[in-house]
Image (tube, rainbow, N blue to C red):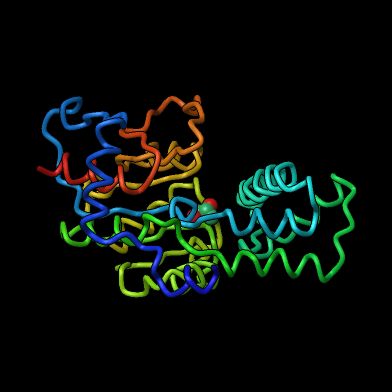
Length: 265
Ligand code: LAC
């Protein structure tokens, strides 16, 4: 099964992609920012937060294998602590990279849940981060966006090693114009300097770069910075109360690609 996934046979072809997009878009909440804002620049590039791309199910499975019955709770606390540590380290000016922060958050989570996290278990769970692939519709959606001449980047807190592992596992080596890690500035989103990395790479105006976020906090950070934003929110979470609103909310990358096609018409 793993082998089948790795050889790429899980990817949708273009015909399947178009069939899917027609169906999903009919049901999706298209927020017409073009209508809301009148004249607006074309979207020329998209910066993706890594969690919009990574399929975390394999990680969840590894956690469940090691700690049966505890995976949901562990993942929940682990992921929250992972981000809280990035924010706290940014505030206090004590940087550690995202790999190290992820490990620290795991150690805390295991202690909190009173789980026996020995060296072997810890390595297995950390390795699971390097074994993750992208979600199934990433390949077709990103190719469709490329066909529309949209420039693509990942703009992520994760280390380059973590990002390239996912790109390589997903056989999408040539799809991104830029793979940007906030490790370049030894700091984390949502500080404005982190989002500025996208502007510097693309050499475009903020308004021409759509930021695609998975975390509501990241979407709000990007919007506050000045990017138009799309929130990929498959969990149907409420919008964060941070005085900004996403321009578009959708469930997956397929809907995102269709949205860009529509607003750029
Ligand atoms: C990102 C996730 C890892 O920034 O926070 O892509």
